[in-house]
Figure 1 (tube, rainbow, N blue to C red):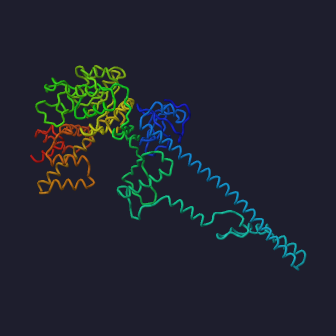
Figure 2 (figure 1 turned 90 degrees about the horizontal axis):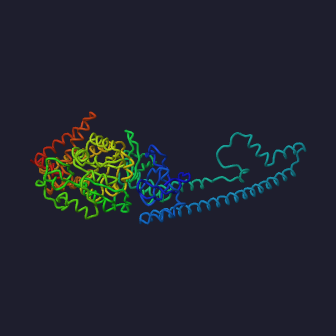
Figure 3 (figure 1 turned 180 degrees about the vertical axis):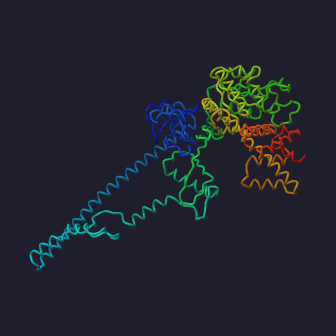
Length: 613
């Protein structure tokens, strides 16, 4: 797409983002907290029928009306049609508003004309009255002629005006009779105008201090936002979200909104990297247009299996590879996916049939769902445009790329490799270097979430590296996750992922510590959970992990050994910049004890057992 005319704020356009089809939108001013990305000229677009806000390159924009028929013929999707309907509804409202304004202007002009006519009539009447009075006075006067002449020259309406100009500035009050003919707003009219303006807002109940943390106050502010949106120019947006900064305290009747888009956010980090939030959940956006590129996927573990399943469901062409059954039995070496890096005989029993299949059976299951089967990582990479990998740790990630028949052997100029493993920044940098040296394109994209979120297509993807690859992966990220962030240069995603998992691992250890302390002090663990769920600490994570402890069910949703690995890498990250991580270090020791108690292959919540043994 390329812009054929000059575009400006307020124009309706067709905007194309990454691999998504062109979508109707409107050029608007971006929120103050969203800075324009570096590089090519971009315009900020709000898309109809969605919650999307995006910086779009000018060459990816077309004016709406000249290309309307062309775009409608090319896209028959239900959501697309809803977006077009939203545009038409918006245009109707604009037209109605213009007609209303036109009629108001006409009324004002008529009012002015009437006012002028009335003013002239009043002026003539006053002049005639004054003339008659003066004439009578002249006729009755018995003074000398010279004095009469002087009196007559001083007594007309013109002389009265002259005298008023010569006097000191007029005091405030009722205007003199001579100015009755002029039009001026009466106090009652001004009062009505002021009351009409103020009535658009309904302020919250009086209070000494209302904050954004107050849910009632937040509801009030959001309701005001909705009122403004319905009355203002943003009413075309079907769904609008605004988030208030929690540090904001309102002490005056002025409201500040910090607009944060749900699917795409561009902001400038202290590091200078651009952060882009994009791609919504598949539950919200079921109408995904899959990329026409061939997708490869290496590693069918807890995360990988759910990801591949969602890619296939959304219509992507996928080739899969995982270790063979022979390698499952050989624990002395080889390449490991996130679920199969332990001896087959030591695997815990699992309810999900997919989880306790051999790797060849796992691949066969996906082949039945429409996937192709690759024999080696090199073959998958050489036959696919974009290849994803999700494996256990830094060693597995390196082996996958550098080992026999590995990824590097299949890399050709233009081939894209996306590593979704959670590893350290140094490993990511090394992999990026070797991939790029062969002419390949590299993106790191570790995921935040667990097995359930992977199955539901609700992961959070943190990406860094080649932004072009990130854009090419847009339909894939939309299929597998609810949100994705682009964090700039290679290594940033690894750092962010380790920090997130450090917080998560430390929190889980604290939960386990609290549950055991409740037990040994004679308090009900169930009551503790009930209280926590009603508190500001309430979360799905807290509830699920406490339920695991109460039920003694530690079926893996996130392996304990992997959270311990991430804590270890996060501590090393802190050491590399001389930053203390004492909380993470303490949690790490508890997980190490749990591993010594043979809890590695259980869920991270099994850290609880480190406290009771």
